[in-house]
Length: 160
Image (cartoon, rainbow, N blue to C red; front, side, top):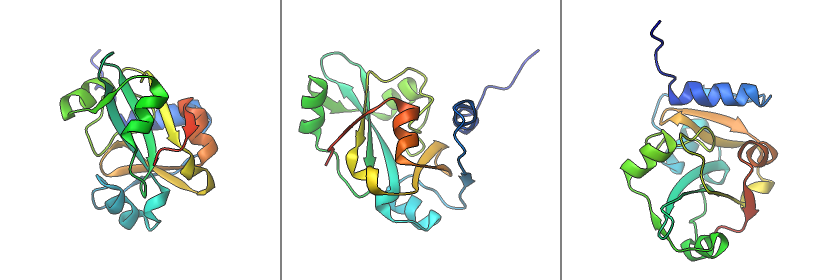
């Protein structure tokens, strides 16, 4: 029997259900490739958008996931210090290979290869709800900061 491969958004929804996370998954009319687009489409603040940023360890080649508030810019030197090696921005091919998602739809969970490090912007702790990409640029899901920590096993830190 040939089964269709699981889409990125199907994978995210399955993982949310498996984790017992009662989350809204929403298909947007417009693209949510950027934090500003997502916030406008959802009707929330940019700060409530969880950006999934993928970096590459320049020595290890490992993929690093940084989950940042849409209002913040990740301080790459701070991230490098936290993981113990310099980082470089990942290109689209690296992102697709390591996460299974295209840029603009990278979810914080369900990566094709688990990230070596997951760092979570502590600025997200005081915002509720949060919204993150669900494996597709037009699909997002609602979650809390506690959900984000639990689902990813990430380490909270000041990112900006």
